[in-house]
Length: 366
Image 1 (cartoon, rainbow, N blue to C red):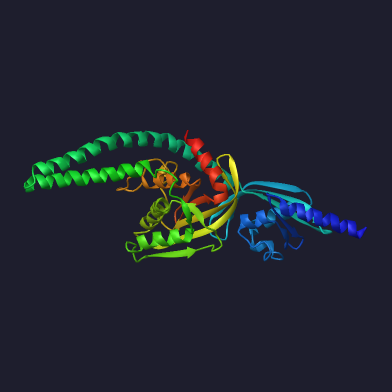
Image 2: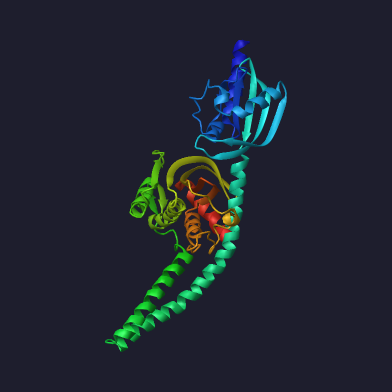
């Protein structure tokens, strides 16, 4: 009889462990007796080290609701939590009186409403961005053709007036401006495709970008690296991804130029990431976090639109170009911002997810 009970309890624990919903069970003394992988990832905890830890050290604000639940069931919508990395998240929390292994306690179910809302919102922004980007790309092509003619004409004029210093001076101005506009147009058009993708370590990518910015970084800004060294190589167009990440890092540095601060670059693996209509089991995440004043709320919803910038001398092309590059790699850039904490997350599917992600990204552009 006891053997059957143990088998039933083991089976119950296995079921809870395999749920994609974040589940935690605490005993009557408020100590954690069980936590599944989904809950550990959501709360940024070690699944095994947290066993036996008192719940007051995890989410103390929830204790009053747990006791109010008693032997019943209670659901809390839009419950705000602060994670160990300092970021805020919102969850729907359901508390149920629940017996496990013959011991009374409470089962806490957590649904990450913040993440799903944020991903859906960013995906909607991408659809809106594509509509604007189509116009920009059309205009870029129309601009590029006459630029080639203007540049060719300057070369002919140089040959016709080889010893005319005054003409040479004006031709230099024209040539320089043509090259500047051509560079601007190329940034509008973005990378040409995925033919140049090869496996690279994302930490080598970050190291390369930091070499570029270190010479121009003010002394009052420090850089902190927080790596997950276990992340495998990802196929990418290295040069394009350098540009995508460089734009984010430069923005973070510029946001702190006046008062200084800490720029954190973090890498992690995230599970169950949704892109469009597809959920991927694992993706790599590169986070660029600054302590600047934050993005102006009036422009935040449009930061991935071309020509939108809160900076006086900004072109409004950096973020759209970065988003375009990452999307061509099957990924997505997600932003969140408040004063003192602005985060840009680059999500990149691993290679075994890449073909499907790129197919979805291509379909969205049609």
